[in-house]
Image 1 (spheres, rainbow, N blue to C red):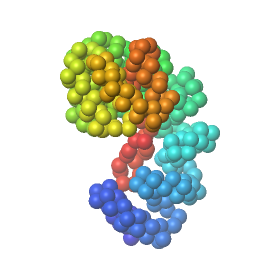
Image 2: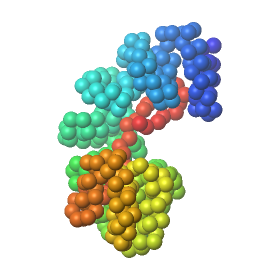
Image 3: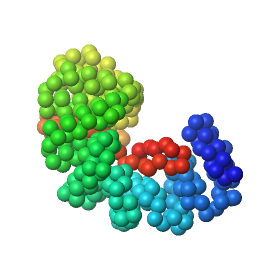
Length: 321
């Protein structure tokens, strides 16, 4: 029974996280039904996300599409794969358009394509049209609302619109750490509501305690806005524990130490940052020293990443890349 074998494979993959057994079960199912587009697709996702076998994943995406070339879910996810894993924007664009032609009301595909058009080609008007189409179809899709919020903030400069979108996300998913982080940044940088920002950062960390960007953001808030250097240093040290080789963390903690007189400690962190990424480190250090360009370079202005939506496979779960 291939359906039973596939479901058992997913139990080992998602619940038991025994990828060796899961791999064996997927292969067993495919040996019985080698032309099942569902099994081929599920195995492609498994190879991509669990075994990090990018070449193998692409082979099985292609085999799945050979069996079912008009399946909008497989098309959508293959387009995301091409963009995120291959950086093949031309093929991704063609597959996205094919997916939309097959299923014009798929909110996940419309949202993904909007993000793709924005980030890959700078086609902002077309991207905005796609975001709005997706929200007309499903007004409460949290991922679309979240990505559109970033678009409004970063591309259109519409802070009010972005804030409204983030708040709508949080009505649907109150523990979305990225939305909490990004809304906190708006309160901090555009509203000067530092206590409100602090509350949201803390909620984000409660949802995702090891999120490095939020820890960095909270440290910067304590240093630059709340004038509480002891609390700031506590969070910088926490960030350094989470990301000992993160250039932004090293430079921002170095800047903090420099501001409070520990020149040797600051230089040690700067030197380590330069050894990892000289260009980025020098830009950040210059910003720390001069405070020029801080709006662009400070981690307190680094929004959370956009979310590319993977349509649920036969296991009924969905993830974001």
